[in-house]
Length: 449
Image 1 (cartoon, rainbow, N blue to C red):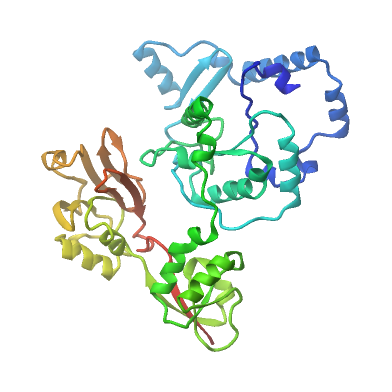
Image 2: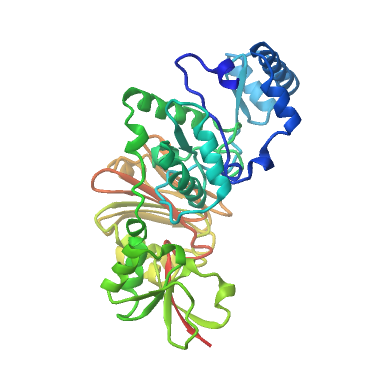
């Protein structure tokens, strides 16, 4: 009845469910039997009356003061923004309103994280089957934008575990979103009705591509292969552990491809913590501290900011510190900076630093321990960069790396970087060297006490 009322003859209907709702028993989120029995008896006219009543009630009470379109003149618009403390209300038509609040702190990100394991929830399976029966037309499972990779992991795992086999295609917004953009989100882990204007536009762009040639539904799907997903992590273990050593992996990682790959490289995988006094090795992110209380643990290798930047010795690297980037800066990273020509020992706590490094040699850099600092625009212009600015926590607490009119700095605490590769593609991120100088996983060695 919802689709009969709202859906145009050639239209598309979108149902929105959060990950937590998809995993719940239907009785948890369902309506009561009495309400259900009443609703299914409604005629089309009765449903129409209900829909109009609901719309009138919510818009009259909540958005009464915005009943008129936003003023067209710049002066009136600024006055309205001042009254609402910077919040903009963007109107599509007289029945819909989207709030955009620049104060929202979370940023949506492009993500290529792949599902790591299959889940086994009866409720997920029941809900997937029920949703698959809603309409006989194209069925598409949308992975929304998130501000953290682990939440993408949940959405993508649900899709590959339960919806793909039911014929759903995937609209993966995390992959579809441009890598260099960082959309403002409401202060939750994912986009919501408020602050979701850019998400709505992104969904519209995806649908436009999909409806044009039906290619987007499959072209952006992730290759769901355990070995492919874990290969970089397994390579880290192989590179930093002795031959014939025992390596611990979570049980969900163990499959024929992973096991065979490790044995081929003369490592012995186990999914249970060894109880003998023989040493074993593991990735730091795979075992919690409580599980290791009976073991002595030694750090063998951590991928630092310096070792990460070394991998881009042929590329253009732009750096900008926000807050503090000095407190936990490792000796290895300091050696890297000295080697490329930056006097990193001059940087003090909460100081500012900007740098331009090309092909493993510093083109320009500045350190300001008492004030914000920027790089010379004339030098930057040779590399297609408009501005690079750094302000430590006491000098403004900002980071800007402006390329093509956009601030590509992730504006995180510590070292923010943008890397322009030889093919012209851009990589951006940050390393919180106030907390830990580590860009990836660590390899650790454990021996039972």
